[in-house]
Length: 114
Length: 111
Image 1: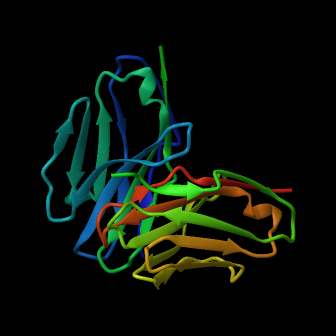
Image 2: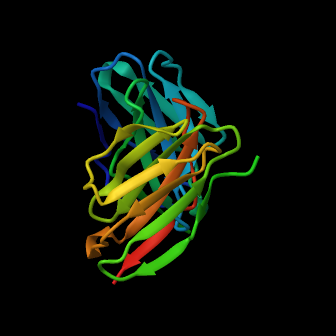
Image 3: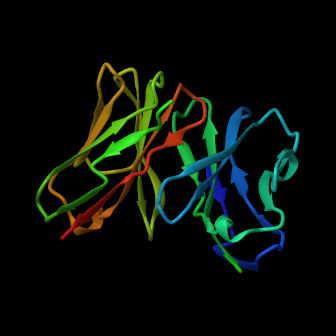
């Protein structure tokens, strides 16, 4: 069975703080994709990153960075120097190559206060 | 490229009615997936279509159905609406098993 767990329901930080959103996944497949999406109040899910199961290289994009560790089945997302515009719900997701569907975590609501 | 478009954006229906939602994928994308998002259940997979064929279906009653046309546009239909069907319905398109890009959603309210 596939599962994505985002244990943090809500996180509140003050602007300029760093924040890490946790994601733990379960799958029996050896080949799969992991994703992070951002959902601002408008409702649209915005794609942030995709990582293939065979590529454990961490990635940095501006203030965003992702840490993928297969050994612990985790794909954590860090925002450095958070800004008010980062306030949103963030979803971690898992998609295996043969299942034709994406499993989403429950999401983490991030509040960044000025 | 234009993004995924969904129509209508907002819809109010009463119990027992039926509704049809439409999704136009990104040009060139042949896979369209539908998701239901509610505060209590989160994001739940409804179904996925590729080249007019349904490849996978989530755990929803038969009142929920969908289809895909030859131009990759997709529709989903919900018959005999219930109060619990009130949700944000999100459509996503991808080239195949690649990254899914989401539309703005249709917010359905059932009274």
